[in-house]
Length: 247
Image 1: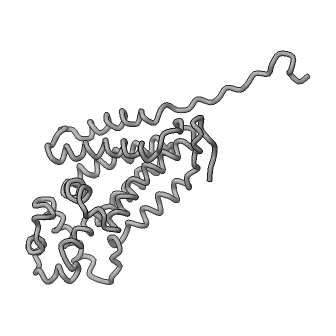
Image 2: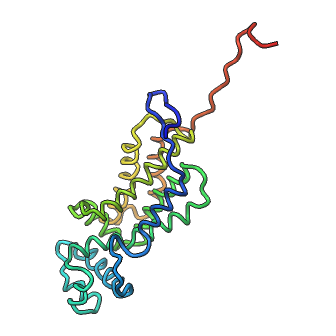
């Protein structure tokens, strides 16, 4: 559905309602991870995923072995294979096991925000804060999964696509509401916004710099969001020409 055209001629899209859009993503990644819907011991599987996360964050996915994960989890190797056929499948499941919690946290935190600008700023800020509070997960996601061929796996790619789709949706929502002018490609703008925060997270994970990640994140977000432009002022009404006013 199209709402209006901007000065550059690109139509401003009216996005689907925000609450419906976000609820769809939260529901998609809540509950059991990814496509695994089998009736197995959830508690035992979570123990495996937590152990794998620690091993992947410590040793890297390429160097980690199933035996290392089994040892970390305190169970025999055969127990791992009851749930996952190999290390690759386990590596797919690890980031997905936490994505649902991130989306749920954001949905709860954003409930009181009414503008696209507020929602977008909170989303970018929470992405960094969640990475700070979950360093093993963020090391695995940002340093191992995201830059690797693993991201091509269907379920992992969908999770990361949803991560970026929220940013694109909010950019379009802000355009449609007149919070900032349209004209730029929303996907390119989303890449800049997301990339700025991601690079800050990666630098912090590798070098522990900046020391105060969240202070730096706030500054980077404020500067990056200037790309969206100022709030569109209301258009002035045309004054009637002299002698044409109705009596």
